[in-house]
Image (cartoon, rainbow, N blue to C red; front, side, top):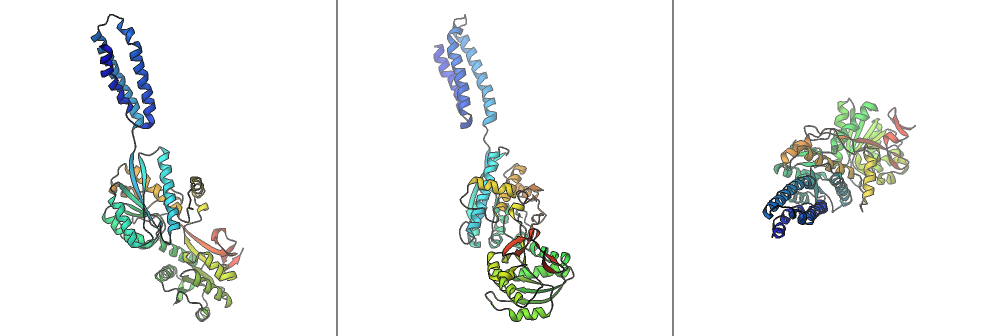
Amino acid sequence: MLFITIQHRIVPMFQVLYKGDEATSCIKQGVALLFYKIFFAKAKLIIKKNWGEQEMLKKIICFAVLMVFLMGMVSGCGSKKSETVKIGFIGPLTGGNAAVGMGLKHSAELAVKQANESGKNKYKYELVVVDDGGDPSTAVSAANKLIADKGVVAVFGHFNSGCALATVPIFHKNGMPILVTAAIHPDITKGSFKEVTRIMTAANVQNEFAGNLATQEWGVKKIALIHDKTDYGKTNATQFADTAKKNGAEIISEDGISVGQQDFAALLTKIKAENPEAIYFGGVATEAALLKRQMADLQMNCLFLSDSGIISDTFNKIAGDAAQGMIAFNIGKPLEDLPGGKAFIKAYDDAKFTEPHEAYGHFAYDSANVVMAAIEKAGTTDKAKIAEAIRATNNYPGVIGNISFDDRGENTLKLITPFISENGKWIPYYKSTIKVVDKKVAKQ
């Protein structure tokens, strides 16, 4: 009777120990089995004493309850599961920018994997990936998909400015924090919405930097402007000119050309007569290369400056030997020269992704890490508090350097690098053997 009672009353208490994480199950089962064997192996010896059966049963039950309680407390300390939090990635996984988008995606996946394996965080993170196709209308649908997922507490991503401009009002309206990764249009943060922050430097900063460097450091005072009449080209030229004029430079002429135009001899002859110290071109590679080649034909030795749109192999191929000394400004810095660049490259290579990280993968990596750090700091899944924590980021040690945000939501770390064409390749100016001396390029 005693053993039947023990079997039916005590054993179920030990069965509690079999619940919990799979990781601790074996330990619990082993401990439970040990105490089970002690009870039943020694039971007969205990009964041989002059205890009554009921008295013995009481003692065994009390002892068993105590052990279950203590073991439950100890095992419970190590078996508590972290709450899973979803964060969203939005970027171009199809379309013309799919290669860039896959690099962004994989870099984000790397950051999430490292965070989950670190064992340092309150939360476990799940990455929810949506495709904006590089198209604003597709981006709106993708943004709404993330918002509809009630588990998603913050979003990061976008490479195309048109996509970001289309989704920012939606994220703001729905109180969803978004950290814009690689879209550079200045108006993305124009509304100063508390939910909207950007990690990459805005385009206008590139042109302001160029204008300041040309006029303040290189001493240029007479500038001729040329642009390709597109919004992109005109905006870059105007922003450069505005900064140059603030520094006392004179814009001696401004001319527009057509995309696809081949012959610029008449225009350049007119500009040469005005004796500029520099020409700034707003546009892209093909027209810039033709201009530079025809400048060489006319023996125009003034500085020729442009925006990031011309930094490509296309420019060097078309311009040929005339490409030498062309200067352009780009957002960012060579990855290997960034504070965390080499470590990121190694970690990405070790992860064995099938696609490369491309030019902007490290911005997605930093974006994911900043978002997760903000969630940990907020200590909650409340979106408003997470948005506040992202904006309050101060000197986060990212791949690109120490990341902080201003009141508008822009990164206070401004990464702009001048590049120069040297021997058919684009070289960071600080690594080049060609320098600007007396308002001319010269081999050092």
